[in-house]
Amino acid sequence: MTIACPACSKKSEDARECPRCGCELSILKMVAHAATQELFMGRENFLAGDMRAAMHHAGKSWYLKKSPAAARLSFLSALAANDLVQVDRWYARTCISVRVSR
Image (cartoon, rainbow, N blue to C red; front, side, top):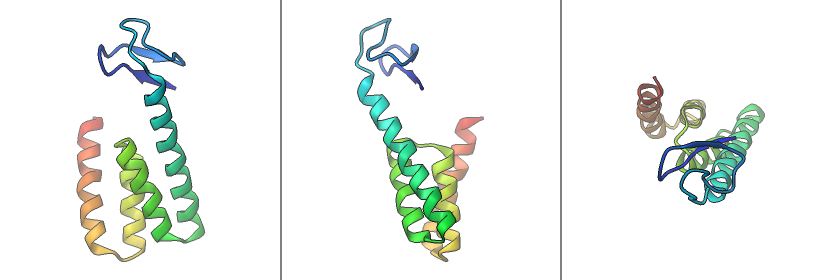
């Protein structure tokens, strides 16, 4: 997994610390891994039809790492659960994620 150093922006593969500035990267890797796990659990719950659990896990993933995939899964889960307040919230975040990733 490639992590960009928050101090100097150097991208590194599987390094515990930044090779350029020595910044600790292992904590960032743990957060990214936790976000990936939450997104996976959200997808599993979505496929099983448990939209509330899917929205919960996708939301946790998004708060850990603001990924477009987490915002989309939260939006789709809220839509399937007919939770229009959450649909509106996640639709806005999905649109922001799309603009940022371009």
